[in-house]
Length: 89
Image (cartoon, rainbow, N blue to C red; front, side, top):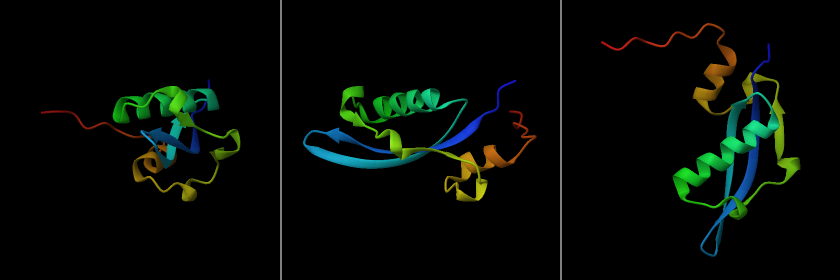
């Protein structure tokens, strides 16, 4: 069984002539899946093509200590073992 890891990915994307920096915490099985999630998210939310997203491989790191995670939702999924999804009425 594979375990899900937490990654912190930093980079920048270009919109018109401006470069906009970003940093995102991602839960994924491996680094490749984490990068794919970043490309998908930035493409859908900001309409950015993949060739306009610059991510240096040095800026991808795996987080082993959950206290380093600043995103509360990602931190909850990283820390909690038995999460229950509330049922709709």
